[in-house]
Amino acid sequence: MKEQLEQFAEVEENASLVKLNTYHIGGITKYLVRPNSINDLIEVLRILREKEIPYFILGNGSNIILSMDKFAGVVIRLDNFASITYAGNIVTVGAGYSLIKLAIETIDRGLSGLEFAAGIPGFVGASTAMNAGAYNSDMSKVVKSVRVLNDNLEVINLTNKELSYEYRDSFLKENKSYCVLST
Image 1 (cartoon, helix red, strand yellow):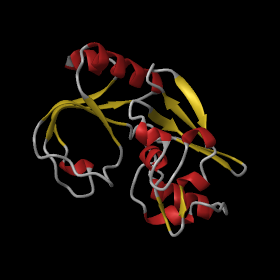
Image 2 (cartoon, rainbow, N blue to C red):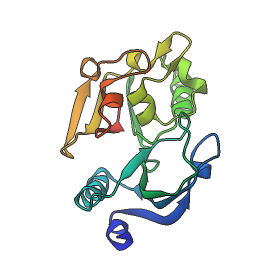
Image 3 (spheres, rainbow, N blue to C red):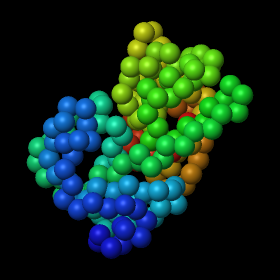
């Protein structure tokens, strides 16, 4: 199994989850996998689904408590999905980009809207999916569209309206088989 996954990602066997969350607690996962591209992520997910191996996509671990028990499946981290591009006042950012870093960078560039996120320690992908927010604002107010993998492992775009944002909730949070790639 490890050899198959290594064709498409960095793989660590029997990896500790302690340093992958802000509470610094957690057990061990059979495999910690870090794909480098969307195509690699798709291949990893295909392998896991074909072999019926449980998996969990973990963001920055800032809004989660991990079990101390060993997870017999695969934890996938998208921290290699940390690209960012600016086109005027439109910012496209990868799911594995730090939300705090993004907020600070956009402020430094004179862009407004993400000031509320300057203290939220999550990754952009998870923050987008859960509609993270503070100070009477949240991701629903700044996200125009999101690039995701759907349950069929197809890359699609969802508009803000299609995300059905509500307080700390969204279509993506309710449909966990979808995976945020960028926003």
